[in-house]
Image 1 (spheres, rainbow, N blue to C red):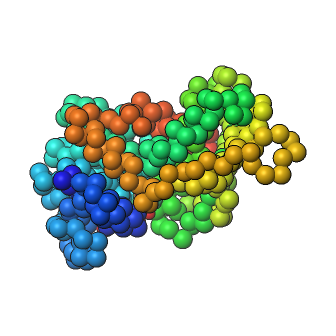
Image 2 (tube, rainbow, N blue to C red):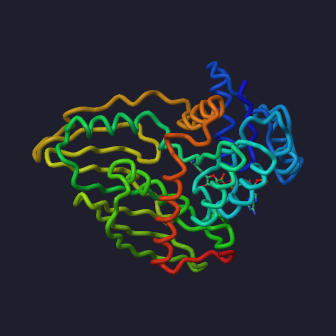
Image 3 (cartoon, rainbow, N blue to C red):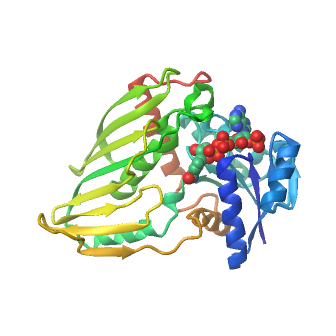
Length: 329
Ligand SMILES: NC(=O)c1ccc[n+]([C@@H]2O[C@H](COP(=O)([O-])OP(=O)(O)OC[C@H]3O[C@@H](n4cnc5c(N)ncnc54)[C@H](OP(=O)(O)O)[C@@H]3O)[C@@H](O)[C@H]2O)c1
């Protein structure tokens, strides 16, 4: 049985606990083994409600437990680096929520440490691991929409009621929390050979980014337009434009429908792709980590270390364009 320990008993931790339960019922040979919170009572309540065997009142105590095969880190972005380091130094494999760290320098240091320790270190950016990614790539490779020349992606939620989004000391802002998804969508479709980036942002009173508009120009001649915000509810769609038609993806965060539209005058999609039914959508990153640990791999091919760094550097550069710096930088 592949035993997972959740570090930080917040909101996404609950979703992961549910995912692990569903995977366990399905017979995936994974289980929620432990949970760690800064507060023992909170850990115990979480363990009781979500079905974890062990509840730890400190992150270090869970990191020291050799029965944990993989720690899933679900804390604010500001603390990912500290918590990854704690787990690696204790000898644990790690799957850390996105954004991987607050900046690229932290990411680089920890990826080196993981390789030194010969431990798995992966980023929980779920869309990279979902099979629909391969389905979209195959449609494009088959030339269904012709040559891809453009892309539009948007992801926005009203999130300014959350401390971790608003506070600079928690590495808040729209970019690291939601902006990472349209950037990831663009990266998965168009690659990373970007020759020019133009962007601007409306900042919150606290100094972190609220609404970001980003345009990426690629060496291939393709252009990606990205809008992302913590101020409003968006449609969250992705569009991939080709010379013969376009793809419409209903939710770039967790695609459920992929439509192929061909021709200027069509009134209905030429094709609608069947997306594989999901448990929650988070099961794929867990399965990828299980496979990596079982085969001794130190990274997941779906989101290799090199790609983690590309994305962190891209977000560093965007924040530099807007003058957004976290107090600990
Ligand atoms: N993949 C996805 O779809 C998805 C969705 C939502 C969020 N996320 C990611 O998951 C991470 C956590 O997000 P969340 O929405 O679950 O946040 P959350 O509800 O605020 O939970 C974060 C948890 O981190 C722990 N923590 C440790 N140090 C903290 C500090 N200084 N301040 C506040 N909390 C601290 C707390 O757990 P204890 O009190 O138990 O120690 C807290 O409950 C972020 O990286 C976010 O980007 C991913």
